[in-house]
Image (cartoon, rainbow, N blue to C red; front, side, top):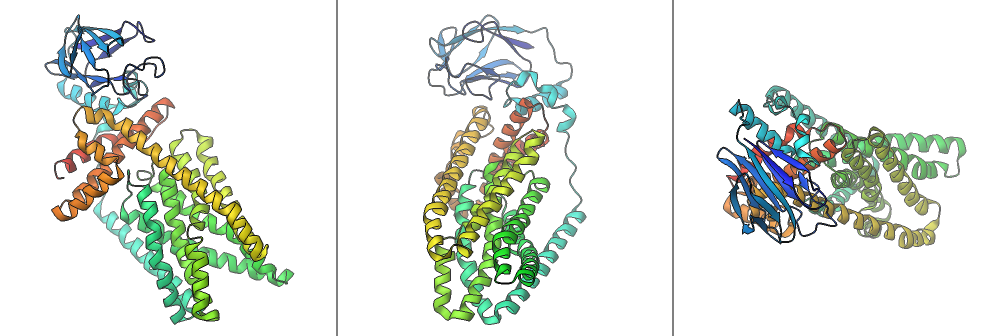
Length: 507
């Protein structure tokens, strides 16, 4: 059977939309297949209604719209529709007529079922009924499970690399400041760092990244970036001091070398996440979170060196003063710098323009270098009074702007998930209360805490993550289709739906 919906009034007058299997979503939202004008046809809701093709016919469902859905003049919630019916989306709203062609038969039920699955994934694009060709049925085939041997080898190599690099960093600390000062400084630096991570984790609450990946990001900043920066900065400082003298080494190391090479080493970690862990790197917010975690890893180990040196040279009072300067007044300085690169990588992840993908991370890196150089320059070149003025009138305002932007992209992700998940909530894949919980910071947190006492923390955590990933996969599909590009979300979407179903039954 084939359904034809002909719009009789409004900006879409005369347009015909066909449906054989799957769903037809109707409303003002940009992810609806029948999209009314969002400015002039506001009687319809953003996700107003949908029509579902089932074996027994076609069924019209109202999606809890504000002004209701009317069938032949009567308001309905869910009912079967037939040829000759007239549908109105809100009283005084757009009307459409229904024609059902029962002669159109689906020859292969199995193929029709696969097509329905593919069509659901495409319901969240700009034009669902014309975009089915972008997802061939072959793309929905099961992805073979990767070899466990290769996985174990990778895990073993990662553990070995982390331990090896950690021993190098520990040796550098002991040789630079001494064993006792290094141990005391490590406690003073690492304990607050765990608290500094919470705001970043909170920002990422709608689509939380796995703990193991955040740990690797922290380790990259604390180990790889630190070792690389120490070696390069030391070589450049010695070279400038030897050739120019007069403290040129300190100036070159702080104002030139440190911003360029420290931000480069941290930025390489972000590029690795963007390329090799793309399924976890979804948008600008993820760029900020990953950049912040890498930067905190770097700053924490750097603080061990600074705190240990202050303790050895000036005693406990010197340590307290420096901790107040770095740990209280500017704990997120490195986070702010490196987040510029993270924002650039996030823009590249969202874009399907090749030039934007290349230039955005590059411009982000330049921004990180500039901010880092400005911060170090105020401390090294300007003296204490100049640093205080710059801190109060440049650094603090910029940090507040950065925090405001972070909240904006967090709110943006919340809106994306609400829009993208509305269809799956309406058709029952995700219960309405679960959808509301997934996009609420307080509800989701309370739900997870409750899971600790009920033995369901792991299931609820995985379920919330799967819901977030599913919503973002719809969004990537929509953007890719609009740009006539490709995205791994085409393949990931049906897998994520299965994951949502798996964990939904266990929460």
